[in-house]
Image 1 (cartoon, rainbow, N blue to C red):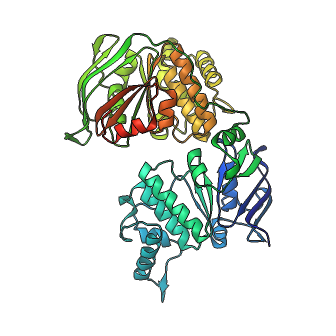
Image 2: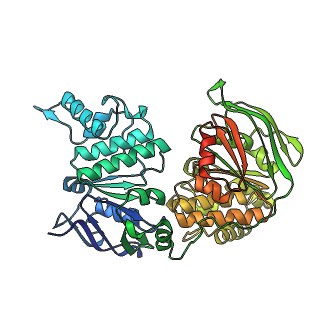
Image 3: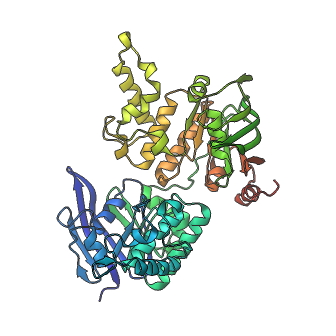
Length: 507
């Protein structure tokens, strides 16, 4: 009998003549956590859609051997019956329904043709205990946090007796404490003999959880290695096809005079003027400087920078000085008029219009630049500018007329950056600039940031990734419960020092 639970052999899948997968092979042993790594667009999701039956047999070539037998999947139901479950990054729960209804939807427990809600409740309770989720099975899913919803998805998979669980970027939307809960559940499932395929850009998690790693690049299998033979640098070089000794390509840059000062700044909750989100914040920013803002989720980082940009809906108090003069910023238009631009935290909701083209997204906020006679758009100039940014920022797109929703996360983020750079800002605010994007795209964004500060542009960067804060920033501000708790020159600064400050310790 084969040592492998799953073998995917010579898988080829194309879309309109373009090969998304080119003879990809994946072999997974029973009871292991097998990490699947690769840049956005490498083919990971396509491969998993084949394995889960979303792309049925006949739409690709190659074979799937599962538990020693050849699988012919006509749809998701076939893969579930085989014991394969996939949990997508975008969770597929029905928010208005209860936990137990979500777990048993489509496979309700019947007694003489009547749904047995009591039995469903009792079985759900046992499943929730198994994934360490202490909530009532009757609770509507909409009342759960994202981390809890993810555990419900895992419980649902276990209810179908899944012995192969596919987790696609499971920790991307989670808080640090939720990530730890999920890691412990994965370890528990491994002990039970459940096999996991774990897709993640967070290589520290891969190193911590995985037994084996397979890397895919440009639709091709690059290699499979035991985690014992790997480190993060090796995985990165396999993913991007070149050595990347330093993920943070720091370059010398001149820091000039003060360009921004925030004084006695208070920001109130959007729903309540009695609750402060930011309390008496004071800081300065100099020309050509990168200031990183660190802190736990809920510490007020986003509220602070969004209020400076004029996009936060809550009440604000305090003063902003730009180039030595007191300014009033009531909305993003005011901020842009002073040369302050912002890349928001949630690019899909706030940064892009998915059904519009790459060109339209880049120029949408700057159409006045292309206004010609009779208010007509100067298309030639617009196309030249868009082409320049696509080339300069290395946006991977077949054409500038492609809908932006079809791009990878990293390329969507580059489109948002291009849109903001087209405004020719003096200050660029970046809120979680590399969240959910692969390591190659991260590296390119870091390089771009250093190119910008060398030109004298100042950057404020909010990030939850402490290695990123330390690798990029000239100076680091740490927030705790709405207050600036510490400010550090980035010299001999450590993650431990930042974390101590972020949890309320003294600097």
